[in-house]
Amino acid sequence: RAKRAEENMATFTADKASWEGKSVVSVSQFSTEGLGLLYAVAGKMKEMVADKSDDATLSRNPPLRGRVLGTLFYETSTRTACSFQAAVARLGGTFVSVDPASSSIKKGESLEDTVMSLLSYCDAVALRHPAKGAARAAVGVARRPVLNAGDGVGEHPTQALLDLYTIAAELGGEAGLSGLRGKVVALIGDLKHGRTVHSLAKLLARFGCVLRYVSPASLQMPRYIQDEVESAGESVQTEVEDIGVVLEEADVLYVTRVQKERFASREEFDRVNGSYKITPEVLSKVKPSSVLMHPLPRVGEIVEDCDLDPRAAYFKQMENGMYVRMALLALVFGKA
Ligand code: CP
Image 1: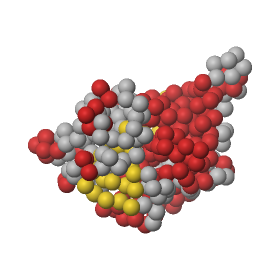
Image 2: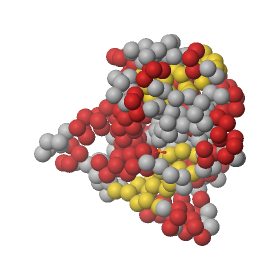
Image 3: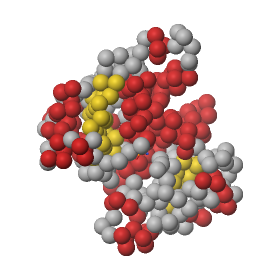
Image 4: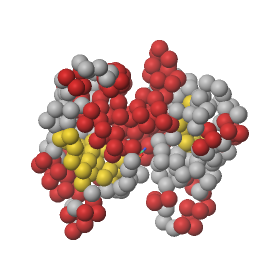
């Protein structure tokens, strides 16, 4: 299984052939050139979705016609599941969705057998699972692409891909990704359990961003992620508890939810819940050029009064998720 997992994964490069038929487990698979290709295709996807003319490419010649994506979500999701489903539908394909509560998962069927079943009917599977390492385990039995849509406290690679796309679009200017060097990105909240920040920190490290980890002491960024960031050799990273320290210097405030479902007890959760709350008053201390992001769902970390602030990018961020996932599907299916 380990051998098959290695074979099914790839390093994604600027060569489209490196993507075809391969699985996505971690952001570590994406070379800088590969990210450039993905984002160029995502930009085209955005243009094509906006084109509502009679001879629009997506209606005339949908690239994924006849393809079927399985969506297998053992944990709840709104954005990731729906954007994968919308992505394949907009490209002319369709999707089959498994509900753990009403499928044979309820009878005790294993993850591996469930993935094998779904891949008998579908051309690829997007998988979310509460266990870290679940995506890699699924790739070890799969003969077709498995796309990690979040594995417990492990990684959420497609979220980090759309986050980086959004940061580059908002801050990088003409230079895109290479315009991110020296930008200060504050990752705020539950950095221990937050898989989105685990993946994103690893990506940002490649582009020389200054990373500020803002969390309560018990929810700090795991050491193994900090080690990976350090080994990328391009980024400065520091930990602080007081959000006030980063407000004036931050180019990006990336706020996350305290992940109630990952705590052993309600008491432990209550001790740290509500540690950070972005309000208009907090935003008044932040640079006018900064970007406020959140992977969503939010449960009070950014109050709704911030939504009309021009720095609030979280709704754009979630829309970008569909374009980036369209690009990923097209590349993995060899149809970009
Ligand atoms: N950002 C994100 O993963 O959202 P969902 O849990 O709604 O998919």
